[in-house]
Image: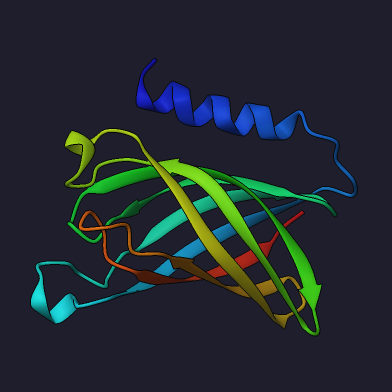
Length: 149
């Protein structure tokens, strides 16, 4: 199974889950803050574009971005969030590719997600990716999200 098929299968699986009041969102990844960036060849400039489908219970998304090692990479994920005061807090599980480990192949990904509403239909998503041994650096990703439907 190739990378695109695997990412599409993950989204299809998520789309078959029970849905309530679905909405569609466009996500613009604007910046990633990496642990020890000054000591490595990583870049914090990681622009990207994604599409997210949300229900009351869960969400799923996919997109492309310029990753921290200057490669165009794809990703797909499913997740869940809960309200905590004014923000939504939760986590995601997904897949990405084109990194220096696993020979640039598919890599599983888990992350914490905090969504902060900014205005009607706009939110700031903060995605915290943990350090995984000597393979990755801890990363905090900043994305703007717009609900268009």
